[in-house]
Each structure stands twice: as C-alpha cells, then as structure tokens.
Image 1: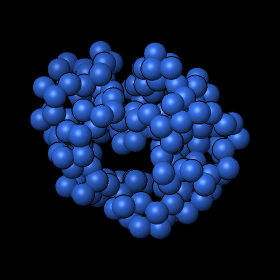
Image 2: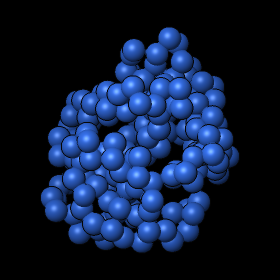
Image 3: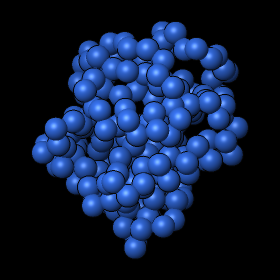
Image 4: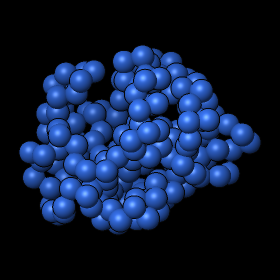
Amino acid sequence: MTIRLATTADLSALCDFYLQICLQQQNDEYSPRWKWGDYPSKEYLSAKLDDAQVIINVINEKIAAAGVLSIGEDPNYRVVPWQHHFLDSEVAILHLFAVGKAYRGQGIAQQTLQGIFNQARQNGQRVIHIDVVEHNLPAEKAYLKAGFKFNNEQILDYDDLGPTPAKLFEYLL
C-alpha cells in the first residue's frame, strides 16, 4: 500500500477508478449520487491534478482509494457557521473521497484519510471541511470514525445535484 499524490501519469487510472465508483453507486443503497462525465469527469480530474492535490492509495498497482484536497474555503461553505474559524489559506476541502468496492471493509478508508490529513498538515492547513449528502451513512460513519466532528445540516447548491440537504463536518489538524 502506498498513499501518495497523484500525477498526470495517473489520470487514466484515476478516471477508471472514478468511473467504477460511479457505476457501483447505481447498486449501492447509500451514495453521493455522482455521475461520471458530470461530476466527476476527466476534465475535472485533470484540472484538479493541476490546481489541487489528488491523493491516492495504491495497492498492487491499482488505485484502492482517492480524494481531492483543495485549499481555501468552498464557496458553498462560506455561509456555514463553522465552530472554528481560520484564514482561507488554512482551510482544506476534501472532495470525491471514495474507496473501491473490492477494498471496502479493510480499513483502507481510515488509512487513506490519515494520508490526506498528513498531506494537509504538510501544506500548512489547520482544518479540513467536508460535506456528506443526506442519507450517505457509510461516508458519515467513516468520517466520524476518522475524527471529523459534525458541524451542522444545511441545504447546499451542488452544480450536479442542485439544492440538496447535506451534513457538514470538520477535522482539526
């Protein structure tokens, strides 16, 4: 197992990983309802490799888990009454965190989240914010287990889903 920053050389494997995640979500009872080609897309992932940090957990040369770490508060979160306040440069947002189906239930989520926390610390961030769409209980449980604290519930206006109830969490680094 290797947790590392993805590079442009990983784009094809990263696209395959998220395509499989999106296809699997059609069969999952709980999911964030991502749609490949809309969110995420090859263009989105390519841009994030350039302007954010994509962290991947590689096992036997396959991506087992991944997440996108961006720096600065998400525009949707600016109205959220966070319990802790930091400069924009001290805030990281975790997007698109997912674990491949074959790797679920093996502690991969927790190991990958620890790698993401370490990367955010190295960047100088002091907090990570994340949202979980309503009824995505497995994600909610994984984040709480990793040490995220529930902040509040709010309607967020997602580009791909429109206004959607979500729970917001923060992790102090």
